[in-house]
Amino acid sequence: MDYAYISKPGTRDNNEDSALAIERNTDFLFIVADGLGGHGKGEVASALVIESFKECFDEGSIAPENFIQEAIMTAQNRIIDEQREKRASHEMKSTCASLLISHGKCHIGHVGDTRVYVMHRNKIILQTLDHSVPQMLVMYGDIKEKHIRNHPDRNRLLRVIGVEWESPQHELAEMLPLIECQAFLLCTDGFWELCDEKKMCSYLKKSRDADEWLNLMVEEIEKNGKDTDMDNYTAIAVIC
Image 1 (cartoon, rainbow, N blue to C red):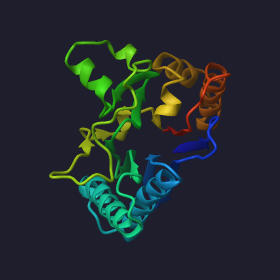
Image 2: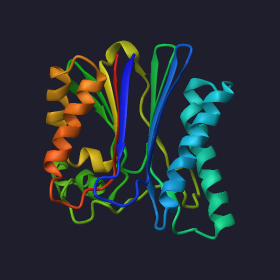
Image 3: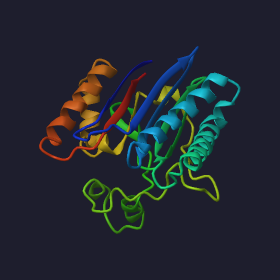
Image 4: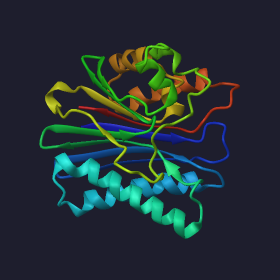
């Protein structure tokens, strides 16, 4: 398993994204979180998501099929508690996208518009769907998938961690056997909005390892984001 990750502020003063890649024996955990909130509160929220996942992983007693759900709920509870303590209920939220590889099986879950892509033979076989207004419009047939990137409501999210839930808001993908997966990409919206899926696959085909694949995508992002108000961008690239 070869992996690399990057997290950059773009043109923003503060980077509210967080990422984690960790392994234990033959298990691997990858997670990317995009914090939402002013005055550094988003940075706190995304860090709490990462910390929650790491603590659950270090605990080592949660069954793989239940891990992502329990880790997200742990993060949700911690952020809600932090909001109450800091009186920052509207300034401390986060998305997350996570991948757990355990015993040859891939478990994927997400909340918000931070994405997980799964590739096989340099083609995307799974892409998580954003919990956002434009994604909802795609599902209703009002716009096409390619229009999400430039939609005026692209940043309007329908689900995030850090809002009181009546029921869990995360989404779990169908489990995939590792043998069917060539590569994974976990990334925030600041990353995928400036590097489209065709380029992701093209650069994967050209790359010898995860670091090269990630660097080629970052070059694309920097080129497309030049002279614009670039958001924070964060990604983990994994090649099996």
